[in-house]
Length: 160
Image (cartoon, rainbow, N blue to C red; front, side, top):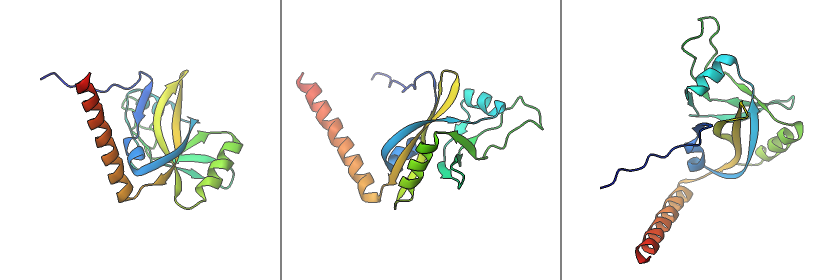
């Protein structure tokens, strides 16, 4: 039996939030910059990030913050220079984009979640998505659809 190929991410991808696409139906996505400390960037280069319960929170002053994303402290920084791993991080978006996303999240059941972190031209970017929470029925339906697509692909490959 042949060895399974390990899925590799693109070289500039830091991390992907797999739970987001499983728990939410993503309606639209957007790229945003991220305001970080130097030790956070070094920690991201080492791949030490966890999305767990990450989401985007909006303030009254038309600002957006990434909340609940854990970036581990960088090991080689001094004791006083270490960052708080759970601190809210400011998203760099245009005012119109923030206002548009805020208006959409005020609708019932919509939220903004991080989808992936990556480097673009030396800067850390986050892909955020406007999503609607899935219920158990739609999760099961997604699994059925994926299984059917896999079976049909196998059958088509067998006939070739």
